[in-house]
Length: 504
Image (cartoon, rainbow, N blue to C red; front, side):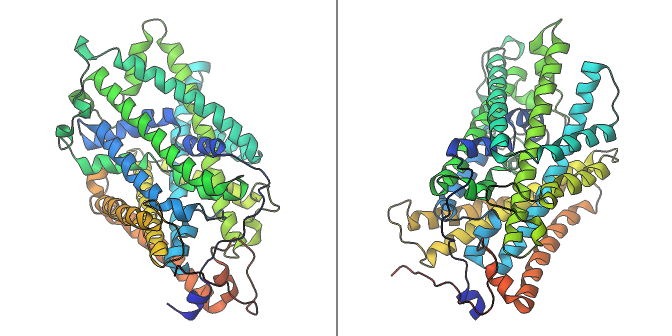
């Protein structure tokens, strides 16, 4: 490690009094609605069934949740110290240095573009169906996409507290809808048979492709890792960030496990495992079945309205998280000040707010011309793998940070336990990342031959591009390089670097 790296390793910025003063519950709502509960039932859960073909898919979701909760245990100690809107890249910077940290920043931002594009595409399809059902108007996919993007871009101007309360209302309302669906599904077993517990039987985990199902299951949790991006607006970020992140992962796990089990009861476990990629046999078909004759159209319109509302809010929250990470990079001097937050408590500047809707919208528009539907699938899978890889780097950073002796915390959940949790998360998320990259053809079948190397190649190129930019800054703008991860304006080269504190 160079002397500059050693002398200017990121320290914890001094806590500032928050302007917005959000609480843990507010942050939970933002993290939960980043993957709206009803959307999980409609898209992610059927994909796990369709591509994994695992009868015990409910247990696969449980294992995915446990893997990510293990990451939270390791992340807890370092995450509660971060006062920066940069998210994962700051965590990586503290443990692995600025070069890998900036590479992670580039990877995460590109991943969010892919995730946003996938959400926008899904929103356009559902909005198109909703308008056709309610108003009997055939809306073109392009028009539906542009309408959705216009609403999301306009909503980014809302104050953060307003966005939070909208997220709370929608998250509660969608959770109630999911509970209703699960209860009705469990009370209506397939063909009048007794309630089946095969979906919760570990013996069925190897009935299909367990690894493929697990990759899709973990992507369902993407969005809950951005808690630190709101640390400057939280009243008590040291408590709120770890608790909200853990609660969000836990709630998502419960929703997915119970809902997947309910579906397996309603259609039969082995029938669910033979579902096609569009998942029409699962949630949409069951909703129509439960509605009964005479109410099917009304119920489907209500469900589509609910989905559309949730996707709008999800798009706003994801765009807000991406904008805050751009603002964090701008605060460190890595990006132009035009992307920064103008004043404490404000929303990020216009260029940062509009980055995801504009760029992600262009990607979604390009993907909409694909007649096979392969491009949107690869966008989601590639973005999900990028986030999983970033979580691996963040876990390694946490473990190394504690092992270097930069904290003095005792007990199992002190530095020793968090090192163990961090190392465990490296193996679980890292193994899943490698499996997904090496078995992309299995994860998303029927893709062109070049796609199997395009996604991993893009991940490597983006990571190296960000790391290369950090090396350029180190040589050409050392004051900017030294400010990466600090959450403040870059120092001039005359100012002394921050001191380091080590455990004895």
